[in-house]
Image 1 (cartoon, rainbow, N blue to C red):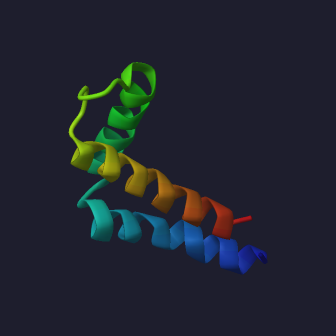
Image 2: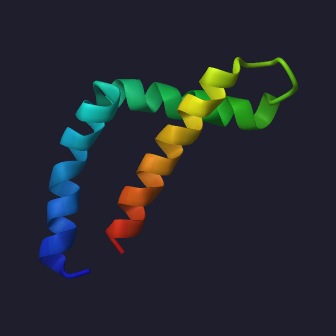
Length: 69
């Protein structure tokens, strides 16, 4: 990806976060929850929806990061 494309992704990232998660703080909270889950994930430790939210957030970040390569 060229420099202008990367710049656009970087510049658009905050608005994508706001659109999907409401704020950087909300996304960070979901990602923190994901880190906790990786250490303590046991059956019935978290609700299925909580795990799905973390997976969706990680996938969104991964997509943006891949597009910036």
